[in-house]
Image (cartoon, rainbow, N blue to C red):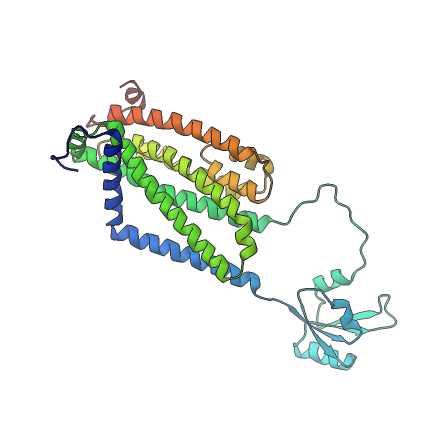
Length: 365
């Protein structure tokens, strides 16, 4: 964009010119390219490591006589070595080759005796114990670790992408004010077009990174044979991308408005801190309260946390079919309101130099 650019360009052309400027600036940055490559490699390594860890067998070595070994048939988690008699079983336990042994014993109520060195494995004892039938009125699922990992993954991606692409929106606004480049830009395009271009450019960058992470994650899951996980997580990831798209637009508008209130980089922290809190809080709330259904339901409807909360509820089938649509509608309304307010603050504060512009003054213009 230069002085020869015609002043009669359309709004769409102006938005794209600014967006193209944001894209070219970012894509020419070695720091951005290197950090993106590192992020993708870490994501791929994490998926592959998780797949390998889940497939790694940690079977307990057990010695057993021929008839006693039938007790462990079809039971996972044990590596059974058949022995001829009790003496051979004791020898394997004493040498440490077996953690315990099962041998026939007619005097035992179950017909089997466990031989161990200093203490018998508790899981083996519980498996062989006779327990009464159990009926659960409200059966739950043992999905704590998976819920934590999903919350950590969705939350971290949302927070990192918002910081990586939202924060530069604010810093570039402050830099343009500080160097008075904004006065040249406003002679070519209106303030709202300038804001829209910044939001569009950084949204394209953020969404492209999300799509790259999805591709890398899918490749890692397929390589490690985790196709079942890939099929189950496909829908929630798609919803995450949709929610993230509108959620990022909302945050980008807030970052731009926050940056327009100050004229120096040294003062930017005071206005950007509230926006950063709104970006980080959903991440920590989902991790700390991920197993609380009431809190997760609320978080899935709050615009700032819905991109993280709703996909997790969808993955565990805790949300009805209409809930993501209702949450998305609330996010769209919030996005429109925040963008309009942010555009007003941005437009009224952009040419005000010197001391920090107060929020009330920026709203009144």
